[in-house]
Image (tube, rainbow over the protein chains, first blue to last red):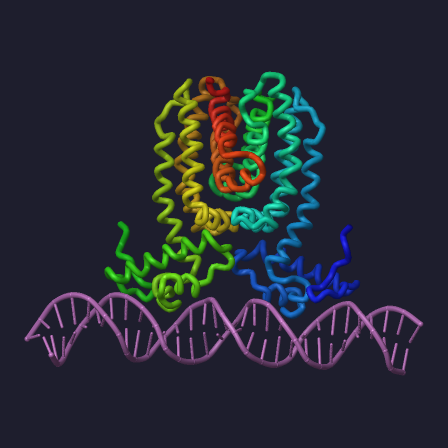
Length: 215
Length: 215
DNA sequence: CGGTAAGCTGACGGCATGACAGGACAAGTA
DNA sequence: TACTTGTCCTGTCATGCCGTCAGCTTACCG
């Protein structure tokens, strides 16, 4: 499925080429977390990787193209988030645990990938379908699981049937993503990480089940 | 308070100067909503405004500086969001109305200013204090009002005292902001605007009061 | 030891940046 | 009308990044 890695001019990349390519990606990732996206230049990435700009252009069409590559890598890692909710029960203590683990999962995933996620979010908000697709890839499976969960609770009469399950699930996921990406902001504003987690967990549980989590 | 507008080299801008300056800001705003932030160049803004790059640099240090100016303008407009919650009661029907109006207020404010808000969000997430401050200016008063509301509900025993009110309020506001900025995304994904609003309203009411809104 | 393809870079035209000096312009003065 | 003054704009220039190409070096193979 994943065909060989190819250079821009069509040649297949060998052992050495792939290493260079990866090094460029690594350096790009580093730059993204230390300087504003707008100021990340090809020449800086190349310098950092100990190579020349021309080499960069051999593997990527432009900075955006390379970022997309990084984002794809990250999306693979993000598939793990699904396991935190798929097929688990939202009843009683189990539900409380699911909520807590999902919150912690989001927070730490975002901490790990904050720089690239920022850019993906921007690209998606700007309407770029490629970035939007990646964002979906990460959030979609979680959203779907939560949508199912909401639907179940609706069947039990705990949530108004008129509400759109996908709307609720999507909003909750957006909340998790947003809070995660502004973690530092919350902290520098007086809300500690330790305070944030319980709040999110509570809101998530409440939103999915219509009930407060058991103590 | 707002001293006269000054050029980069210290002169006070007169009538004509201010007009040019404003025109540059307007054109910048337009460019931001049509092209990716990363690709907005001084020369394009200047061309669009029918002037030269040198003129742009007379009024702004760089693109970022001009964006900050635009963002300040928007922040003033955002002060109106506060009125939707300040001093209003979350009890019964009134509470349901407050929730609904706040949601609608956020959604339409974001629709109106989506381009600049994207950039402000990015800047804030990247750790730029100037952008962060503007983001605060918009969200802070709403968050504070909601924090008070949560605290009241805690006093009534409807919300666990252990939870941090600011954490809950902040998370809910983040949710509103995030969903608002990805409105188009939701739509192109199958969740209609009409479905989104009730979901958000429901979640907001539930989060603040601990109870479902009355029918 | 050639042959072949991969891998890298120097160099170049093109364009954006940012600074300056000086020209254009409006308004007041005589 | 001519002159003055201060505001406003732009031509121009040095600098630096972009994106491409031809061509050199390196690795692998028979």
